[in-house]
Image 1 (spheres, rainbow, N blue to C red):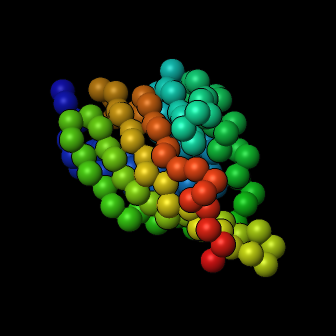
Image 2: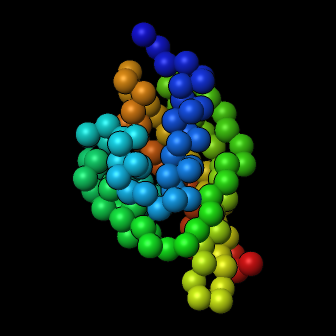
Length: 123
């Protein structure tokens, strides 16, 4: 059975909430065992364990994440979100655009986060 727009939309919202909370285990539960993450483009993590480890790197960083826009077509979601991270007295804004593909179980099978260091802004 094909995934619905509502199922994918819910998964994206859960992803954004988990990113903001810095919860690598909750994020890992959203990914298929053999998922591939590219964040940013060129930095590839293969498999759920590697993806959880990636998110573990930002676990203790204070941050907020907010979904800005979302489009869903078939098993693909494309969305932009903003993430503000706190480092001492400074705040940094990043607004990546992610392209996610989902498997038949509603798990993320691939994600590509499109951003570069030039997109990181001090706010």
